[in-house]
View 1: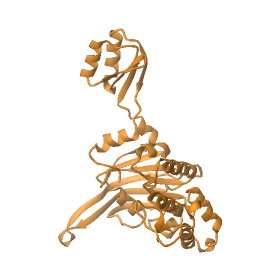
View 2: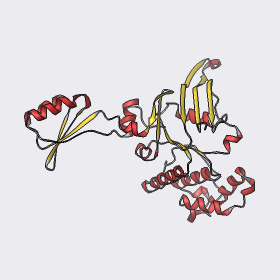
View 3: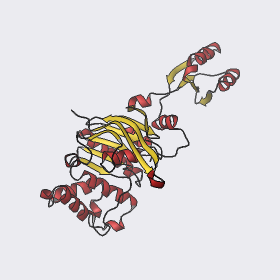
View 4: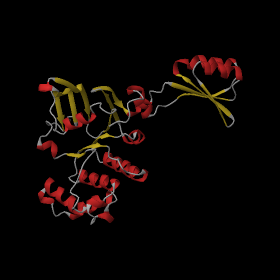
Length: 312
């Protein structure tokens, strides 16, 4: 089976300046694959090329080099469009339409034969918690409500591939949880989801794969489980640590924290054996010794630095 998304050595170049002589490379030799049925996080700091990559997948931009395939077709091919649901980060709908009429309009555009299918519209409005606002004009919607109607429009034609750029933008914690549950339910139905979000804790809970790009190049890609096992620190839980040993551990860059009835020692992974021997030598009883699990935020900051801002 062909990958749902495939980029092979793709480069996208913008030209600017006098006579368009200046070349700005937004994507540089990018090669990634997303298999059918996967939920893939697509992350990068501001200006990394993430939006350019999404626009290229959608057929809005054309690469200067490389091959792009979406659902086995060239981007923009109507056969691919039938199977794609796209939620951009910034979108706008007809403000004078009600939620119900907006979905009817988009259902007519997607499949004229189903334009009178009120059941699917009612089902989607209920799914995104807008059933009580079906008759309200979109111009009166809050930011969170706009995000919900955007999600409903994306799901309207039951696409196999969903490309979601900041799907929880503007939502409160309860709304973000509902979107997370919706994504997991779509995953259970075998949908492929290509997801970008600056809320990395949410990404961590729903995605199988991670792609991180920076300066137009792929920094890392792989299973989420591998990303979270990149821990570089070791954690010891001991009964006590003498003051002199505490001073030595801190001098080596470690930390010593008093817990209820025990002491936690954190050190860099390469020092794990040396610290263990030091603790044993000091007569400490080690009750546990583990590698601290990384968070996705830890991995992101390690790869792209802490001065880059968000992931837009």
